[in-house]
Length: 202
Ligand code: HEM
Image (tube, rainbow, N blue to C red; front, top):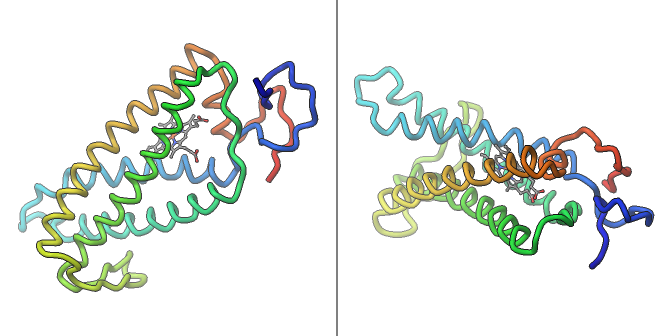
């Protein structure tokens, strides 16, 4: 079995895989946590607001603005993901655990992308653009298919529930690795170096 950077028997100079995630990916990961949870909470709450609520227009405005911000961050994060090396799987993780974690990460990215895209399709179905914090407008191109707002709305809603469900499992998995298995899973998604650290290849 090939040795990786976290294997104590590995005395080879570390030139291929970094020991932790790229600093920018770590920053993006933790910035996106409050953004995603905040967007979900506001979205869940705002759909029940009535016309007489002071938040009736303001809440969707902020939800959409932060959603566009998230889309930009996601795009940057995906670019970095494909350009920078990721740490190798931890050797104590079985092949099954490695597979489940790979699949979870891919699903998290996929859900985020589709949720952002369906949000755009809901907001722009009536030809209007999206005003982002009153700074600029993302143009809208109207309907690409029939009943776009309703259909995209259903996708947006159900994938948002799925995302949150998956995030809970993902976070529980990370905490289990940290507190029960006491391995480096959570540490390498943070900036501090562990003892057997080598310089990260950035
Ligand atoms: C909105 C919430 C979250 C989202 C969308 C999210 C998304 C992701 C994604 C897409 C990855 C894969 C990174 C990559 O390979 O590029 C990842 C990795 C990771 N996440 Fe999260 N995450 C969230 C919350 C959390 C929380 C709350 C924790 C900890 C309690 C956590 C801990 C981790 C760890 C430790 C990794 C690295 C796993 C590994 O090296 O195998 N995440 N996350």
